[in-house]
Amino acid sequence: MKKTCIMLGDELAEYHFGIQHPFGPKRYWAFKKEFEKRSLCEKSQIHTPSCASEEQLKLFHAEDYIEKVKTLSATGNGYLDQGDTPARKGIFEAASVVVGTTLKAADLTMTTCQQAFTPIAGLHHATQQSAAGFCVFNDCGIAIEYLRHKHNIKRIAYIDIDAHHGDGVFYSFESDKELIFVDLHQDGRTLYPGTGDVMETGKGEAAGSKLNIPLQPGCTDETAMKFWEAAEHFINKAQPEYILLQCGADSLDNDPITQLSLSASFHQFVANRLSKLAHKHCQGRLLAMGGGGYNLENIKAAWNGVIEGLSNQS
Image (cartoon, rainbow, N blue to C red; front, side, top):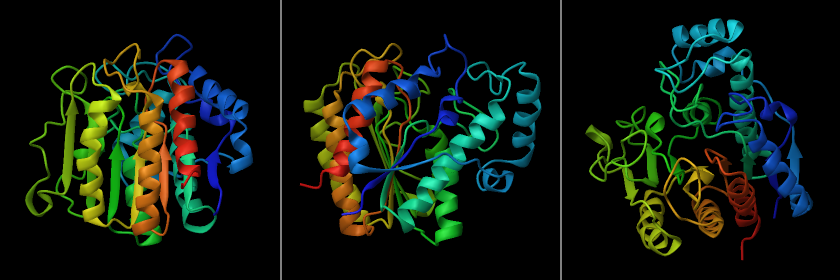
């Protein structure tokens, strides 16, 4: 069994919006400290971050938006969206490292280790034309296009268990029948971004290729596990060539900006089940991305639980 590739490096901590912001630099350090405490490095291959090129950013994002981020990043003034995502000085470079590291992890799964985890990643709200919800560049969407262009992988399953609906991915690929989309999230009627209704299943030829599962505030592992059975059946039936997992820790109990009550056990369970599906359909190829999460204890538990889930095939 090849070891899981883990992306680690101080550069990842630079993607933040200030020490007091919910998406602050402490998120990375909390994860890394717990990763080392659990001695997970012994089961892993450690790899350093990388920086995406502008050509790679253009696989998903519009050129004029990329230029906007560069300009506002140089001054550090204003917002990159309607008021959620500040244009912190240097954010262009920091966001490019997030993307580059996700793409490097994707390459590693094709050559070195089959499965990989990158903690500061899974920025699923950004659209082709705008930042959104603390997400500057959508590394998930870029990874989908990158896998298709560089590795000729067409049928990709994107699974998202962040509390927030992965709207930037969903609507960008809503008419793409080869992008299998499964998203368990807090009901959009109670949480940003307000999307992801169960009736949203894809458009045109892609109708039926998307599965949105809204969870009610207070949802626990017991209920989520029942929904997961349908999600796993959906993924298994689709027979993807590659699996992407956005494993946001903000779906755990006591997150300061969400209201779900899942535990790290659910994240570990999902990672393990997806790992098995990856070995069944995808030659083992799976990339997990940290996503959201604003309670440091939850980040420690959820993300390291995902790594343990990927590492344990029993």
